[in-house]
Length: 306
Image (tube, rainbow, N blue to C red; front, side, top):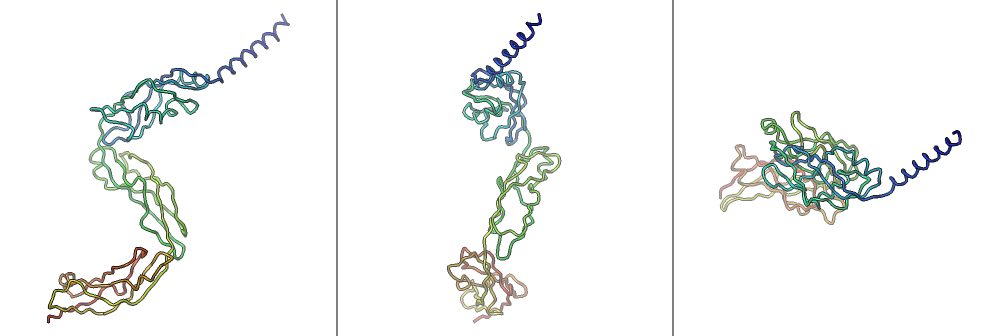
């Protein structure tokens, strides 16, 4: 009897090795998994109201096929653009679009060869929603002679808010958490979380942002003040007759934009003013001008009738 012990041990060990080897091989089989869908459909609940069974021919190891056979259900997030409204609460996703979510449904260790159904139908109940813009909270500082070009870009620049109507209608915008960068000298891109108001949900919990910088030079010069919109037979004089113009311009420059700038007072604004003071304006600036400052910004006007 003692001689049987080592033999049985070797037999069990060899069977274990044989089984492990066979289960590590790749097989193709029909696999069914229950799927609960989530999405950010406008005017709909986040989660489907029922589970749908998804069947596909899947290629995977024997170990993974056994694991999938024991898997009860899975929750998968589907992009709203992949779901097509059929009628009522029903939304469909085609087998072609479903391929994008194969690993979400059957796991990373599997390859979906084909789905049995041409499309799947999920039921999403109505839920009140509204789209609002996303606005950036920011705290930025720049190295000398660097400037923010345009404004911070956000992607997406709007989100859907879901919840009770009175809560949703009370919200005009969603704000990011503070975007903080100090001593910037080059463009920056990143992601930032959104501040979610209480009692609602959002179609996104974060956005991507872009901060584009440009290098600038400061130019200044003296420019005469012109008048515009003066009717025939009327003369309008302004004081001072010339002002100091300070410009921030993208570097490098092909020419001096101060030489082409026009500073003017508008006659219609003079008539609307009570004290004869006009706010000065500047145009004919090149596209490379980032910022314009007129000193002084206001002039005194006098109308002379001929």
